[in-house]
Length: 251
Image 1: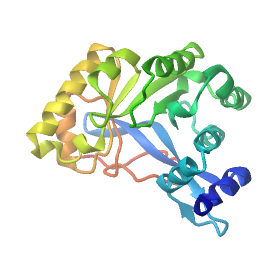
Image 2: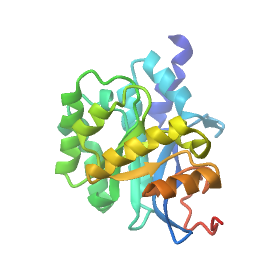
Image 3: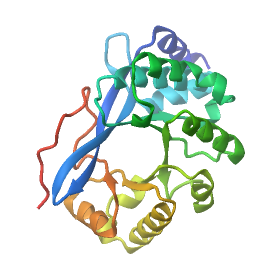
């Protein structure tokens, strides 16, 4: 327990920064940035970066998951104000929110204060643990939508993100997990999962996003399937400032 005490100070001192990773569409072999996922990083006192998994491990030990999730969310919103007209993906942990109207009030107030348009914001469920209370999750997501925001379901295809959950929560964007995009061009099982998720996503009227795209071969395969959006190192790694454009054209 004592080994994780540092997370209390990090949260109190707000030593959190944001990195931006572009989310793109590909049209006639040209890459267009349509949005950015804002990713949180911790900061040591000397300014060096603390990876998010280390922060949230310590927060869980200290029973500070809600406090850290809120701090990261507010920092992401604050740093989202420099993104003009594009989509802004902001992560949240559903089990850290016990009452959406109360817990999310500071987030929504900051969005209004910064004059960010609600339709730009896509709140992204990042937790892959089993959410025992699906009705609670739906309550949170319905509250987001009632305020004019969109929401995305992350890591679809792995863990407890079953097709049943996908159908029940009706997200605006479905993100196919890295485990199924990386190497999909050479793996039939991954292709089957990717195609199944795509079919259900489009049937719901949602957009299908393939994350973790790292090679041209996988990108071409996913484009041919019909995926709408893409994210991954093939386009850009997370960056301290949002990229304005991506000049690469896949051949």
